[in-house]
Structure formats: C-alpha cells, structure tokens
Length: 82
Image (cartoon, rainbow, N blue to C red; front, side):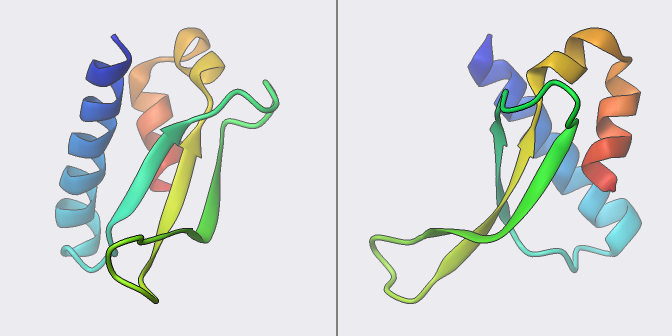
C-alpha cells in the first residue's frame, strides 16, 4: 500500500509539473511523514545529497498521511501544488 501511495504522489507531481508549471520544477523526493497532524505538508530545500554524484542535492516534499485519511485526495493534491 505504501508503495502505491508513493507512486501516485510521484505521478501527480509529474503531471502537475507539466500542466501547471510547463515542466520547470526540479525533481524532488516525496516522502510521507507524520510529524504533526496539523501540518499537511512541508518543503525542504536541498534535503538530500547524492551519494553517487558529489555536490548534487534534491529537495523534499513531505506529505502527512493523516491528511489523506481526512480529506479528499483532490485536496491533498492542492496541498502538493501549494
């Protein structure tokens, strides 16, 4: 189930990037974090560093799984866009 959620979030990010941002957004890692139920998501600039490409970083968007249970998936996607 977790793999399916991550896959859907990646597909949604790629789709929204193409349709809303003309593909200009950089790649990112989408994680599912449960730090605070009042936080729907957060963004971390250059959160991860590549082990294979020194000096290369990638951003993180962390989504709260609590949020998915309590709102429509469309609202979660709106948070992803935000």
